[in-house]
Every structure is written in structure tokens, then in C-alpha cells.
Length: 109
Image 1 (cartoon, one colour):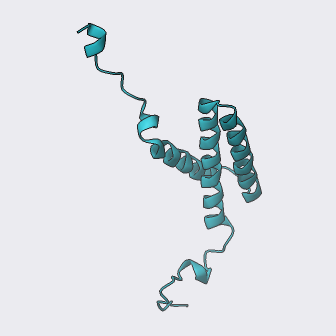
Image 2 (image 1 turned 30 degrees about the vertical axis):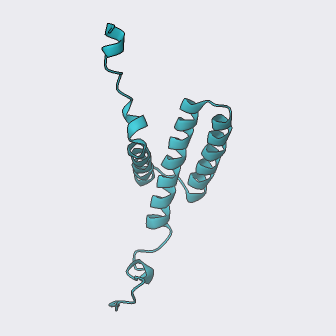
């Protein structure tokens, strides 16, 4: 056997073996950006929609690396939108924050 035939194959990049790690990191980055930045909910949703359109165009053009970056940007924007919606659009005393589907009692002062 030749040396090339017995050599171990190169390891795949981490993003190819564990793609959800990159998506979770992008989502968390969006949450951090919304926490420390002043971005509105409309900007977050518009950015997410634009990134998905760019992703679709790049994916159909077989530009997979650029499409992956666009998809990560979409998840970043979704993370920012979720954080903004959860913390900025409802008052802290909103009763729905403590309500659950099970119908447990809720104490109101």
C-alpha cells in the first residue's frame, strides 16, 4: 500500500460536524447585540427577512459559504428580535409573564 492510501483523512471543520453550535452562537450574539444596542423590533425582523432572502439567492447560486454566513446573520437577527420582544415590548408587571398553560394560581399584589 502507498502512504497516501493509508493516511488518515483530514478532519472536517467543526461547523460541518456540529452546525447547531454555530447557529446557537449567532442567536446568542443577537441577544447580546440587543441587550447593549438600541435596535428596534422592526429593524431586527427586517434584517432577518433580508438575510433569509440573501441566503436563498446564494444557496440557489451554489455559493454555500456565503449562504451560510447569511443564514448566521438571519439567526443573529432572530435572536435580537426575540430578546427585544421579550424584554422591551411588555411591562415588567405584565400578568402574562407569570401565567402558564396549566392554569396555576397567580398572586397579584
